[in-house]
Image 1 (tube, rainbow, N blue to C red):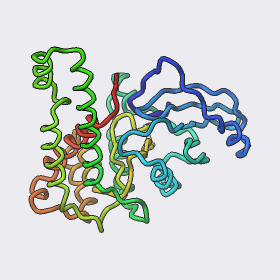
Image 2: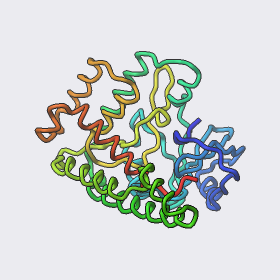
Image 3: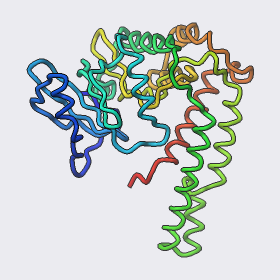
Image 4: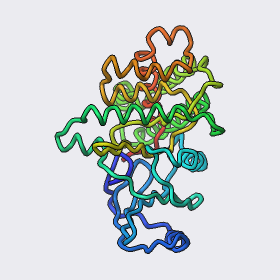
Length: 302
């Protein structure tokens, strides 16, 4: 299995890209059997089974806030050859990525099977992320302030749209109660949230930025007993590697020894004085609120 984490089964299967057949023919791949795998937050995936091997077609769909397809392609090309990277076979500009199927199950699937990760698998995950942080070549730099402004603007627009819709359905008294009880409909909270995030990331260094995945969670890790593949690179860029570290802690509940191992790799990224006193707590809290703002910026999820 391969697709992004948040799998869902749409009411109707998305249409395959019209240019896929030509792409496969160009690379001398017999289409064989094509099976719809699932839908992530923005990308449908198909498994292409052939006599020579299995491939995954990651088709670009609607673009969620913070996603840049050209940047995703650039990152995928930059990580080729890394043992933890998906093997990129071909790119169809603006349409999708063709990759060789990576081995293993997602951490999500492993947990659903009632199994826990072996120590070896935890070590593989940590080493893959540490290796990722060693990449500092000319890739796009994440502008966190710009993203926060973008997300906040989209979130405010969602609030206005929701209020306009509710106003047609609710009385004035009911609408006021709804606004008080629903954080997604509170513009003041969105403004306060974005201002706090901006303040706290203003002093993050940029010269020491390194490749940061930005979306590490159980669905984006493919594992076997002796191999780990990091998938879904649509949010990746040069950035603050501590954000990956706190996501690993959220996923794995890192031991003191595992945290220390990551801190050794993070020593090249000097945090501002206030943040550096309690980096795990401070950056974990920042990332949780940043994700909340992104979620509020998403189009209607009905």
